[in-house]
Each structure stands twice: as C-alpha cells, then as structure tokens.
Length: 471
Ligand SMILES: *Cc1c(COP(=O)(O)O)cnc(C)c1O
Image (cartoon, rainbow, N blue to C red):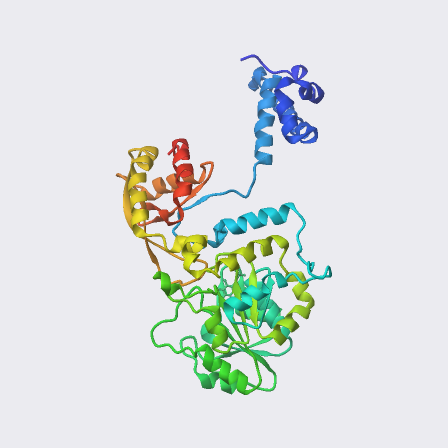
C-alpha cells in the first residue's frame, strides 16, 4: 500500500470531466454529482489529515472516488417507497398499503395523472362541476342511499360527519363501541376534535335500547353506532341492532350515523366468506349516514365514503372542512372503476383484486407451495427445513378480526438450533434485504410465508430473486 497524500487528491472539476463520471452526470445532473464528489473528497481529506499513513493512495484515484460517489448517489436517488411481497397472510395489511387495485383502476389513474380530466368540469354544460358527481350516482346505486360524498379516508369521514352535525352538542355511543383503530384513531378523541360531546351509554359488554332512549336530551345531536372492526365482544353480550337504534333516534327527530369501518358493498357469503354487514343493509336498517373506507373490503384506493340522506350530505358538503379533506383526481380516478366493477357482481371475484385474493382456491395455493419448496429450500440452505404447510390468512385492516381464511404456504424452520429465534430473525432480515423485500411472519419457532397474496403472475419475480438470498 502506498501512503496517501493530499497533493494527489483530484479537484472536483477534474473529476467531473473524467470518463468514469459521465454516465452519473447524465443520470442525476451536474449539481447532484458535484455535491456527491465534494462529500467524498471532504471525507478523504479528513481521513488523510487524521492519519495519512492509514489511507491507501489507491482510494484517492479518480476511479475510486467515482465509485464511492456512485454508490452515494445510488442511495440518494433510490426510492424509499418500494414494492414488496406481502406473504404475511394479512391481505389488507395497513402497513403494506392495504388494497391492491384492479387493472381498470391502475389504467385510469395513469391516464388521469398524465392528461387533464373533467375533475370539476361539467362536459355537458361546459360549466363548473362537482368532483363528487363522478362517483355519487354509482355509490347511490350500490348502497341504496340518496346522496354521497368522498373524503380522504374514513377517519376524515367520521370527523367531518360529526363536525358538521354535532358541534357543541351531544353524541350518544355505546360503551361497547368506543373503538381504537391502529394509528391513533379513537372514537372519543375524534369526537372531541369534532367539537362534539361524547355521551357513553350501556356497558362494555351489554347495551340495551333503553340505554339509548334514556340518554337522549335537549342537547343530543345524533345517535352513533361504530363497527367493532378489530375486536369482538363475546360471551354475555347485548348489542342493539341498527334498526332499533334508528327507531329510537327517529322517534325524537334525530339522525343515526353509523361508522361501518370496512363497509362492504356486497354480501360476502356468496363466496363462502363470513358475513359482514353491507352498506345497503345499514341504510335499509334506517341509518341516516354511513361512513366507510375505500381501501378495506371495498378493494379501492384510500378514501372515506359518506352516504345517506340528501339533506345531511348537503350540510356536510357545505362545511369548509370538506374542502380540506377532499380527495384528489388520482383517488377518484381509481375509485370510479372499482365501484363500476360492482355493477357486474358475478365477475367480481375474478376482477376485484382483493376479492380474488380472499377467495383463492386452496388447491391452487397448495400446488404453489409444493412447487416452491425445493426452490426456497435451496435458497435458504441446509440449516433450515422448508415444508409446505397449511396456515390461516386474515382479511386485515380490522375487517372480520376473528375470522380467518384457510391458506397454504411455506414453513421454514431451523433444522437444529439452540437459538431458533436468532436464526429466524436473521433469515427474516435477509428476506427483507432482497431487491423486492419478502415480508413473512415468525411464529412458533418458524418463519411462515403465506402464499395467498403471491398470485401466479408474481411468482416468477419471487423465484428469480431467490438466488440473491444470502442467509
Ligand atoms: C378502519 C376504520 C376507521 C378508519 O378508517 P381509515 O379509512 O383507515 O381512515 C374508522 N372507523 C372504523 C370502525 C374502522 O374500522
């Protein structure tokens, strides 16, 4: 090794002209390259000043500097939002972006991003339009509601509904329904933010019609029901059906607002899935407003949908907060085609991506698991045993929390180890470091890869990168 000396350090200008840096400048521009080179040179300078004897002169060669700058720029320009393989078994995984959109929606989004659209422009009259008009008729047809509006997410929908109908007044909710959804959405907190006063009735496990009736007073704005999305109260329980709460509210001239959470538009039982109350059923039971998410069971983009009585929707739309919570063209471009798929219910399980994942035939996933075992086995090496296994997928995002879907996948367990936990953690980490990270779950001394969300079209990409695995 020859010792480095500051005298041999090339200048930034010299480096910018060097052939090794031409493609980098073409890719990222001169400004970013200059900055990266300055950073590398500054590091080298301080290393040489600190202890020149310890620095190899080869590091000061233009090619070496170019290489360091290349990797720094590579990191700086690498996207932080990455596509991953969701093999967790949770189909609507909030941390992994919830629903996957069907091709119709993806196509529509791409077009809306690239060209002007009639977002708020009435093509018939040439006058100003309302962005809700793009989906309102569809939402009304699919839910039986009179009117509809769209906001950023269901949390926003609840905030807006309460902030419009109940500021400074009381909202009656059962103690069994004071839900916390992950990510700091808690009914009491949202209520406070909306300026409404929460009146809790009943107990955690049992609420009776008289609890609602007795709580109504001159300050009551509305009665509210909240879907117990992510938990179940079982045992000695009593929950008053929507229809009865609606009757109590209507007898006093008050509206019933239902936060349905996931809010499916179709009866899932027709595909052998557990029943989840539909938006239409809730409207038919007498709810005056229903709020639900766009990216849970509905299978669309992140959005909050509010459907119900025309006069109440009109009030909501007149609230300045609606302007702050409204959705953009990209959301509407995705939502409209997703809603339209529901007009062909017999094709839904094929065309709506999330429903297709919920209803994947077990034999298909089983065959996939068997085909993948030898490939994954050779990738993880002989210290692990890979076997096909049955497992349970979840719908996720708080929809049907106690129900699970029988699924198939791979179980990867250390062959013999005093520290299975440590070995599994290491494997989990290396899977996350793949070009397209693979996310599984560790449970019972094994790493489980649920194949429900690995459709045939994704399998080649999954297999191809296995050779890069370095356990
Ligand atoms: C999921 C959920 C929300 C929040 O919906 P986002 O679309 O995630 O904002 C609110 N209420 C209930 C009951 C939910 O299940």
